[in-house]
Length: 164
Image (cartoon, rainbow, N blue to C red):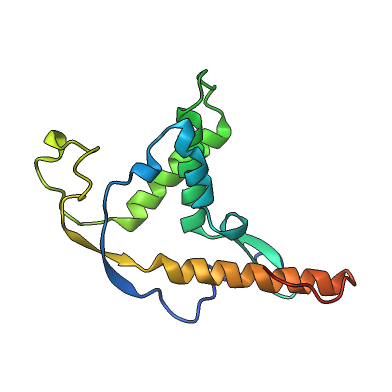
């Protein structure tokens, strides 16, 4: 794809399946210096970028861009010395706002959420939500990255490479 000639959405084989998911609080994603690596490790392969078309033009997928922004916020919040809010942070804050508006999740939250002890009660309210199955998107990104690495090696004359 060249210039403005590119798809609006990732070229998946079909829409992401809708699944029932119970969302719970997670100690793994607390905001602390100790858990920052977990936030980083949760990002998709190659930060979720995909390369499309014969020239392997690079694109960001919105879901992974949002995860990058969450990592950026977590990183900002654990800094011992407050960092100046720069253009990147402003961009991420606005990007998350847009993402929330686009999702428009209608799941009702329980009215007693303020009385919960989030360290002990990780149930997330005990309700299920209808969610797109992000695992299919993660697999697409990983497969796309592997294909790009093989093509890149072939173009540079490296020959066969093993994808770990």
